[in-house]
Length: 138
Image 1 (tube, rainbow, N blue to C red):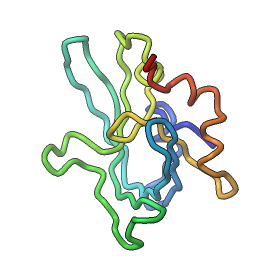
Image 2 (tube, rainbow, N blue to C red):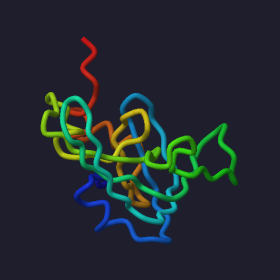
Image 3 (cartoon, rainbow, N blue to C red):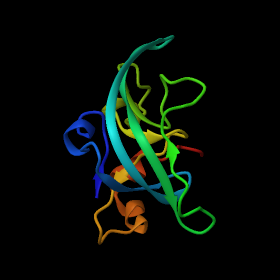
Image 4 (tube, one colour):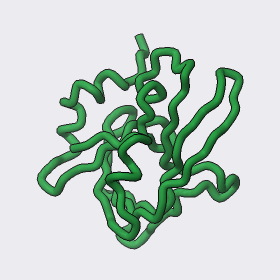
């Protein structure tokens, strides 16, 4: 199991390859990701400059209730500068580990992990780094 970050995504992900990716933060699940490219971006926000990458490709959720043949584009249809899978670094990260180390997340901020064939999504919750990235609710 390997956490996807803006530092390692371009090195790990090969165009045309399909990866099994899991998440277990706000929700728990997995999807297949057919990688096309990593696309860098820079944006200016009130807290400073944000540098990151968008993952460009297609994704298909795995599990009950999901279609076996429905692949979704990762690029946002309304704004092609945004992806459903992206990561960024921010100097003023406000102690958000995801923004401090540049974690690739799903559109709702959940950290993404590349899973090997023998690994299950249940193992993500046992990873101390995943625990450190969970929202602090109380």
